[in-house]
Length: 73
Image (cartoon, rainbow, N blue to C red):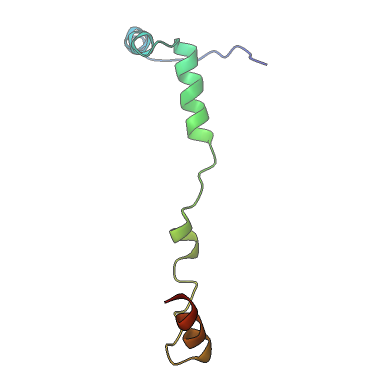
């Protein structure tokens, strides 16, 4: 359900924002809504940042490494 929202914006910005919205084939309300949606979207942490440094490399002398190497390398 959509509801009205009143914003206070610098007077000289309003016509510029309306022109920009029109150039994007959108309304000013749509532009504000999309921007707020993007700003409030939960940001996913990249896999590399989440797991980086949490694993230890296997020692090549280990029995498990040798078995995996025979099977996959």
